[in-house]
Image 1 (cartoon, rainbow, N blue to C red):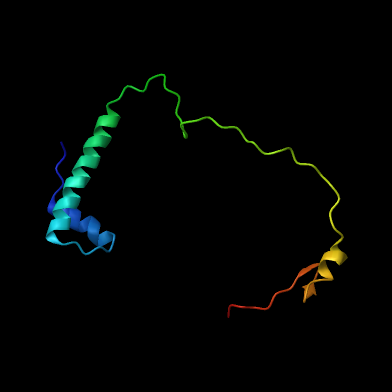
Image 2: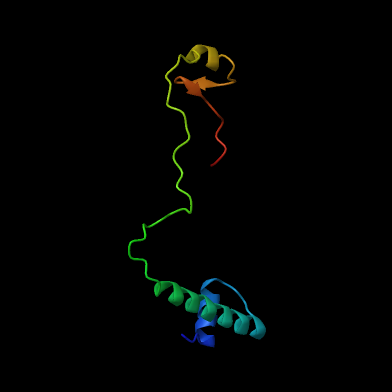
Length: 96
């Protein structure tokens, strides 16, 4: 089992901008060791012949086919706009 030092935990905590108590440091060190041990266990599994999977269930696209249909006329849409410019909605500047 890989041992994580207190210094390594404090280094990671510093990178994450966390201030840990002594008790939290010890708990995190133990948790990190458990996670690494679990990852090592997973890396020992024989996965030959197993198809790489992104999801547990294979799902196909459930969207309908695109259907081209007539839309509203540009002038009908823009007639309701408080401001229109170059065929689109004009909005006031909100960021300097």
